Image 1: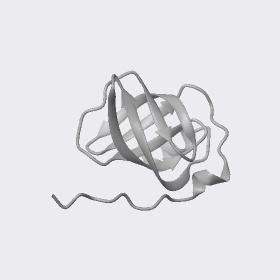
Image 2 (image 1 turned 60 degrees about the vertical axis):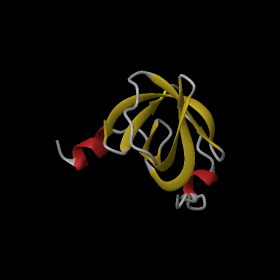
Image 3 (image 1 turned 135 degrees about the vertical axis):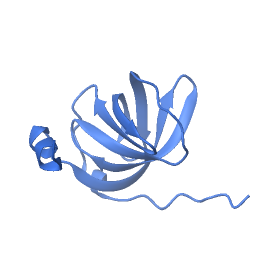
Image 4 (image 1 turned 135 degrees about the horizontal axis):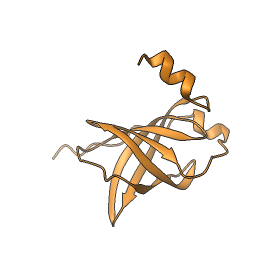
Length: 105
């Protein structure tokens, strides 16, 4: 299936973004960057390698809020989530957060 076929299946238009967030599940907090977002889901890039659990997690972003999301796929550091409820996306979803600071040690 081509990327055009995937785009046609989507109900909501994606917005490119670069927002800092965390994937929260079972007392685990994984930092990530929301790469793109729509009213129905998001694609994130994890800042640390790790396998995400199947099922519902909480995706938390200072600009967008906290919401339940289901992991749909994961390939390496990238993962796709479907939101439990449709989100009203504010203009902040288009903006970027400052780049995360890396620890040189």
